Image 1: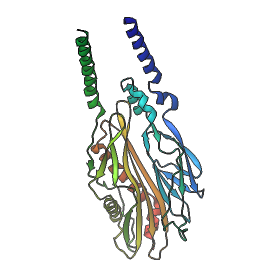
Image 2: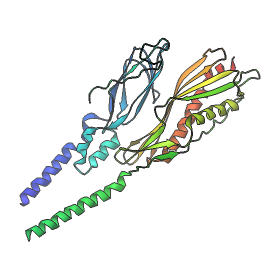
Image 3: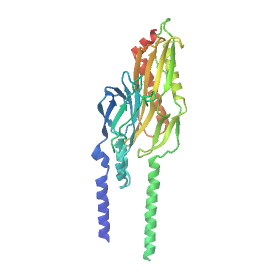
Length: 145
Length: 204
């Protein structure tokens, strides 16, 4: 009976260590986001002030929401967001009394952006195509997560 | 006898779990009610009058293109979003007032016959993130600023972003308000510190 308890305690301790802050250990606190536009060559300004011309990728903290402004001469500008959300894998951290969860959350590792690839479809400023209703279409391609 | 022991053990386990939940809950800082902020604009200091007597009058127009009026979200101790933070102010009106204040302090007169400053507000929000023992509040503003002459020419067009960040202990309205006020000041300062913007305003 006592041996079984000891085995249980060790098993729980092993599980706790094994999955403790797994997000921080296995995927780090940043992630790459690919930014594209249709057509390419749009100037993109992120809310951090970082700029780039599509297509390009940026490395961003996992826990920070992204706001992107796409601008290309002759096309309507487009604003897109790619917000951060709590990642499903963090649920494993709940098993050893939520402490690893707090570590992953504090480090920012327990989050992911909703899209790993953001694509803006830019509509021409004049002579919009049928179905566009004169407004810029924005669309985000979201690879399955 | 053994069923009584089992009952006592079950009760003890229940008490331990209940105690843990009660102990953890205050640490999570859950706040499920919508927060409200009263934003204000702090004008720039050490401003000199640059407008000439023959400088054209300036009209300011602000359009709000934000996807929603929420300016932030509260989070709990596990980083989960718990409630929205909204502004008691009309933010486009506040932004318009901020531009008019700065234009006035530089000697430009308000009027519709000269240049028009178009401001398209795309983003105005604060985000809380967790850290170890404390967290961060990051306020971001994104706006498209252009100057349009009476004849329709656009001598100035620039996308302006401003971001202010500071550490916080509480992910609440007060800190969101502080950071948003700072970001607003920073965004307007970026526009008015741009010589190209002032040059474009001085000409017809």
